[in-house]
Length: 357
Image 1 (tube, helix red, strand yellow):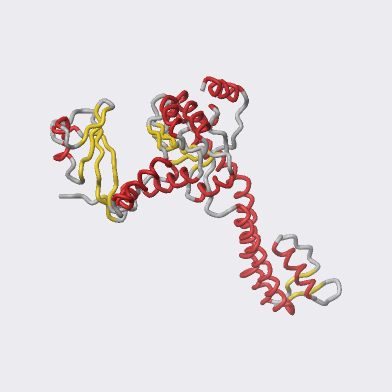
Image 2 (cartoon, rainbow, N blue to C red):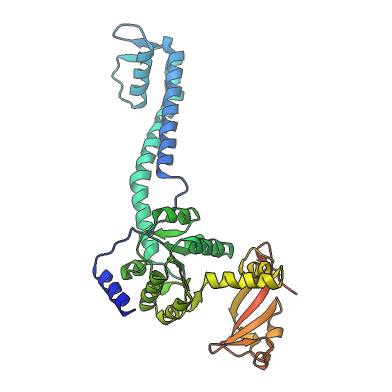
C-alpha cells in the first residue's frame, strides 16, 4: 500500500492529464451544421425556382437571353448583395419579387451563416467558459469514479431517486463510456481518477459523496486512498470483488465497502430458503420498487421517542449510534438520541413516497 501511495505522489508531480469537464448538448455539432447548411441551400433553391419562373422579368445586358445558368448566377449575386448590374429585374413583378421575397430570404441566409459563426465560435467559447465556471463552483455534487457496469447502474439509480443529472460528475478514462453518461445529462471528464489533479479539478472536497467502481480492486483502493487524502470528510463508497480486499478498502478510508459477489451469494442463498426473498431484496435496493430502504438522521422532535413512534411513514429497522448498529427490538431503540441514524423501509408509489396521515 505504501508503494501505491508513492505512485500517487509521482503522478501528482506531473502536469494535469485530463480533458475539461463537459456536458452533452441537445444537438451534436455536425448535426447542427448539417441542419443550417440544408436550410440555407433550401432557401437558395427556392429563390432559384422563383427567378426561373419569373425569368421574363429579367434582362441580360450581355446577350439578352436569360438561361438557367444565368438564373443561378443572378440568384447568388442577389442573395450576397454583390449586384454587378449585368442581369437586372426590369418588370414591376420582378422587382416586387426581389423586394418581397428575395430580400427576406437574403436576410434569412445571412442570419443562418451569422448564427453558424456564433454557434461554432462564440457559443462554443462561451460553453467552455461556462463549464469552467461550473467546474470552479462545484459543490454538494456526487462524484462517480468509474463508469463500468456498477458505476452506470449507480448513476441511473441516483437519477431515479431524484438527483439531478447536472449534479453528478462522472470520471472515466474511456470516451465510449463517458458518451453514455453524457447522454443522461451528467458532467463527464476523461481522466485518471487516481491522480490528485483530476480529483481537485472536480472539487472533490466539496462533494456530497463519492462512488468508486474502477473495475479492479487495486485501482479502486488506490482511488479511495487519493480521495481520502484530498477530502477527509467526504463519504466514500467503493466496490471490491475479493473478500480479503474489503479490510484494505476500509483502511484506505472507505465508509462503505460493497462486494457484489458476496451480495449475489446472499441472494442465491435467500432464494433457496424462499422463492420471493431475492425478489424482495432487489425491490428494497431499487427506487422503482414498491418499497425502499432509506437512511436519515433523527429529527429534533423525535429525540426521546421510540424508533417505532418515529417511523410513522414506514417501518424502522435499525439505529446507528456511535458507530454501533442497534436492532429495532433492542431496548436502546426505545429512546432515540441526538445524532442517531435511522434506517427504515418506506413504501413507494411510482417512485414517490407514500405519506401516511
